[in-house]
Image: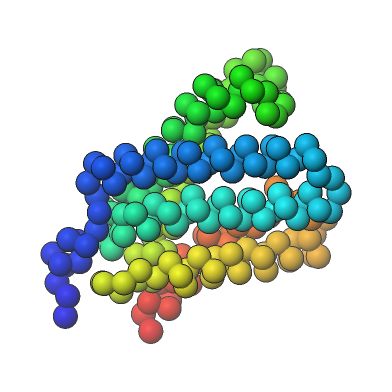
Amino acid sequence: MTSVAQTAGMERTDVRTIVGGGIKLGILMAVGVTAFALLSRVMTGLAETVVQSLLVLVGAALCSFLPALWVRPRSTDAIAWAALVGLLGALAFTVLDIVLLRPLALYHWTWDQIGGGSGFWYIPVWWILAALLAWLGGWIEALSAGARESALLKTVPGTVGIALMVTALLVLATPAPFHAAVVALAYGVALVLHVPLAAVLARR
């Protein structure tokens, strides 16, 4: 039987893992946003919607579960550290966004116009969302994994599968159109639903 001390020792909560993971996550966010913006310029119609939806699913899954992969949370504290990786990732993306992406004018800054030229009324929401995704992903990983092995190969497809079912339900049973924003909403709902499901399965 594995002791609590042994389990905690498998977690990675050192500065290099947390800060380095946040920087890597921020770079991945910037790559994903850039790909989304560039593909939007050359694609239209259903093809654009499908590709954007896939990018949203992949990006959301990476933001949710990469911090858990790096931290390997098994305790409450480590789940919080995984959430911090997500937050640092969003902060790193914000720097890259302001320094690189905005000067390149990759996309329209509609939200800046709504906010009177400032983006700092909605940018913190991005930070909160990134921390929330990583927190939920870390929680699912901690519930699903054994003391010595990661469960990400099971949890990631599980969350994506639930998201696809929720997307189908929203599109078929409500006025919501098939759109990347609807897929993003469905993924968020799926991630929340996966937490109690992982808790139930962990008790078996």
